Length: 212
Image 1 (tube, rainbow, N blue to C red):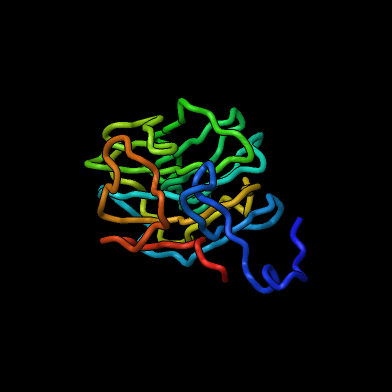
Image 2 (spheres, rainbow, N blue to C red):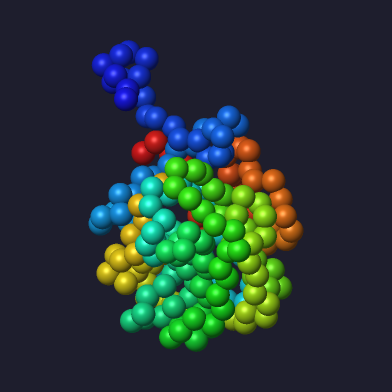
């Protein structure tokens, strides 16, 4: 509990650590309550990856892992599936990819599990048509020869929920969401970022990391 009347607290936004033990870095985050909260960004070719390399990464903190909860994706039944990262009810992270737009053509489901009350760095990376899913810098699933992802030209990017009428809503927090089109930022196991992410070459989106 914080006393916001205290002059050292009042008027200052709180920061949430994107590092599991909270000791290395402080990041702003967006808090989703699992009940109607999600973000959308207008449709753009920046989020349609085709057959090229790309990286989607973020820090995520879960208040619930018992439901299907979407982190980020371009994924809507009526206009075409492309890619999606979400939680699974078995305490795992999955990434779904579609080349047809009408169904899942590649699935990556983590071999490791997640829990509530902890920050995780999650990254979906495609390099030379081979996909890898990382949790805290460790490869936890992969798929080869994924093909050319479907180009959804109708719907925007959705963060914290599904594009299908705002379902599969996230109960938790997202920080430092970065989308890099044209670069596989990670190609093998790595140490999770210990500082805030920056706009590196080919960054198309960097969000959920500001006080406003």
